[in-house]
Image 1 (tube, helix red, strand yellow):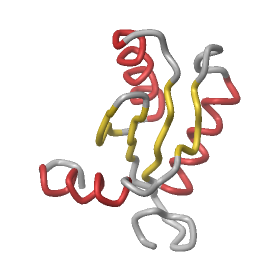
Image 2: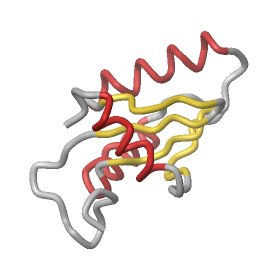
Image 3: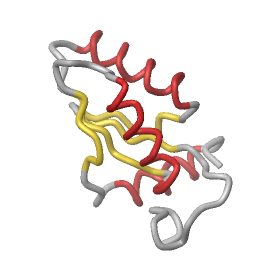
Amino acid sequence: MTSSNADKKHLRRLGHNLKPVVTVASNGLSENVNNEIARALTDHELIKIKLVADDRDAKKALTETILTTHDATLVQSVGHMVLVYRKSKTPDPRLSNLLR
């Protein structure tokens, strides 16, 4: 779904009003944080993650690690917020941010 600019624009519009589901702070990507990101992507498909890092390079490295670990797609990165998308195999209409 995220192959074209129109699809990404649609996802950015949907993600605008979302609140961050997960905050990655100074401890980095611990096992619990990774589990929470995986659960949120499975349930909601489109999530916002707040990254608390010192500089741009650290945020970029953290973002790349999240994307590769969870097989997700970066939709948008603004400041400390990252909008991430991963299609669910069986989306729940009550939880999915795309179907509501």
